Image 1 (cartoon, rainbow, N blue to C red):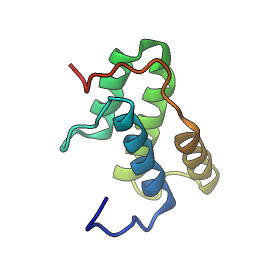
Image 2 (tube, rainbow, N blue to C red):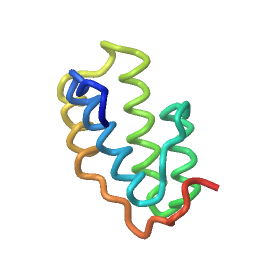
Image 3 (cartoon, rainbow, N blue to C red):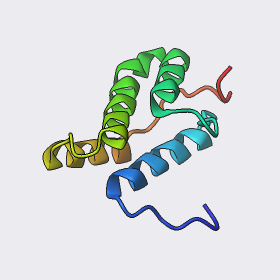
Length: 96
């Protein structure tokens, strides 16, 4: 993203990379779409991947909106899972 500084937190950076990867697969996050809504929309579009998508978005939202509630081990695990996630059989639509 040009003109924006890189996120300082590794989890924020992992989430942004996750959303960019999904955007390239045709599943763009809407500009003001919260993480939980994004996860639910993705789950409907990719039902075979619904569980991991819901889990990733719920855990990220928990960290983002309730800071200090996630252990360092859980945070490291979420970062690794966000970095490892690859959409399979993604539809080339952005969320109808």
